Amino acid sequence: MNRNHPVADLLGVILHHQTSASHEASGKRVCSALSFRLQSERGQFRYKGKTFHLQKNDICFVPTDIRYRHQTTFEEIIVFHFHLLSPAGDDIRIFTPKNPEIYEPLFRRALRLWEEKEIGYYPRVMAIFYEILALLQEDGFLLSGEKSGLAATAAGLLEQNLSDPTFTVDRLAQELYTSPSNLRKKFREEFGISPLQYLIQCRIREAEILLSSRYFSQKQIAERCGFSDVKYFRNAFKAATGKTPRQYGKETKAP
Image (cartoon, rainbow, N blue to C red; front, top):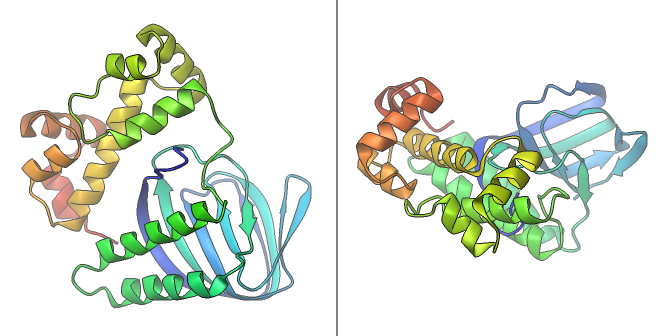
């Protein structure tokens, strides 16, 4: 993931209580989680042969598709569930903020807005989520994997420029002072897909978020997501999702 510009699709915010619980995750998690512990007694994660102890005010990031065991005597936590549009590594990360009084009100406000679901709640919660991510980055806690080098830099630039329809792989290669063929090779080795496929995935995911909000026309979404025209957007969206933007907008709304 780009270290400075994480892009996420928010799925939900919940208040979670656990008492005398022991849970083993099978590695089939379909989303990432970022949590703030309002209370925690003897909470711990066992992961990759290590034990991570949890306490009140800890912030914890759990990525998708990992296997771990979680135990606690009592916990009360607020959790964001979300999809990240780029790799975030495969490690659980725990952070104890020096100033938890800054973070707790943000988590609580996001939870309240999500539960009340008044008009405009989704973009407001997203704004809070990104504010939390910005604070975490300032405090040195980054939601990014250990990947670095050409491919990771390229992925970050693609995310930053997804709204620009003129941003091509050739232009990306020029900015990184490499050849398009070398860029494609390194990118596929790192991410398993081509830079163009990655860019289209980012654009489609952003389009899904905007369609779910129901605040934008298809023309506005096409422009915001870097498609040169509405027809191209509609064709690309259907090829990626199996649905037209209109069908997706009717069947889906912000969670």
